[in-house]
Amino acid sequence: MENTKILAPSSPEAKREHRRKLGKKIASRALLYIVLILCALVMVLPFYWSIITSFRPKEEILKLPVTWFPSRFTLEHYAYVFETIPFWEMLGNSLFTTCVGLFTNLFFGSLAAYAFSKIRFTGHKVIFNILLSSMMIPGVITLIPTFFVLLRFPLAGGNNLFGQGGIGFYDNLAAVILPGAIGVYGIFFMRQFFASLPDDMAESARMDGANEFIIYFRIYLPLVVPGLLTLGIFTFQSGWNNFMWPNIVLQSPENQLLTMAFKFFKTPTQVDYGPLMAVSLLMSVPILILYIFMQRYFVQGVALGGVKD
Image (cartoon, rainbow, N blue to C red; front, side, top):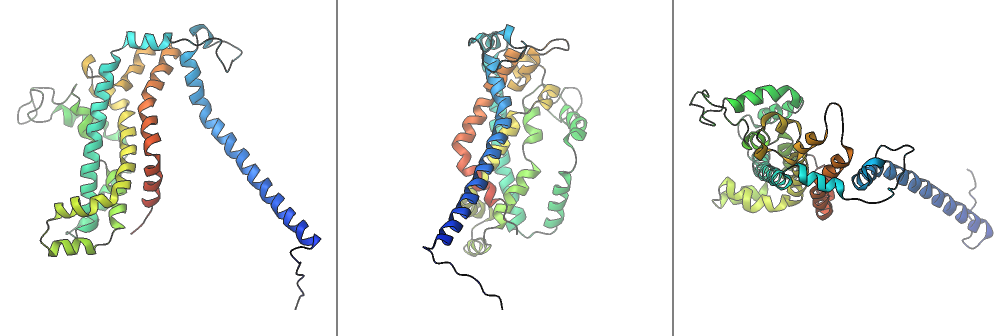
């Protein structure tokens, strides 16, 4: 049996060993901080470049060699944005479509998630698996079918009962809201929260005569608020940054969203970088404000969302 040497806490050897371990710990932590700082700089650099480009004079934007600080700050790009596009009207349309989509996703997504996790109806697992499998279909594949469904929607936009004679929901804000009114990801995400809650509460409420909606709304929904807030951030960001679909289904100037403003500053032969960066920063303000105020709930919701049944 090998003899182990035990050092007294006050002995010189113990102090040297303690200093060695402490130095090793400080060095490893310093190395970690250096790596994290470098990664943060790499991620922040594009955002910083957008900021200084939006305030940089036009003649300095493409000037070489590259300068990381403008010679003077100007608001001419922001003024040009407000002169070129109906900014406030586009902003109102974007807020309307995003907030309506946010409400429908949270309500119907959480309602469906409650049904799949707490109500044992026939075929609920099969239906849920079919919904999950639909997430593997790329969204670009469904663009054309979705477009024709909205174009031939019965009794909308001059269409008759058979979807003929009009334009349906084409060039209408409803064409942006309806396809994203409820998402499979939201159902899956919220189901994780409902599945982590005990079934006994629902059984007790049913014995007391409560219907399923009362059980969902008064008992379980208050317990999954962190999940709702997290899903709300995801949904708001997705709806706010929606670009390709609005450009397909919206044409009238009064129906355009803020994401469609980029096309006013980019042509096949020229890109006006100053106003383009100004619009990008103006669009990012609501997302930044939302995340700043909701980051605590966002972290908590992501952590709780990893619970598996």
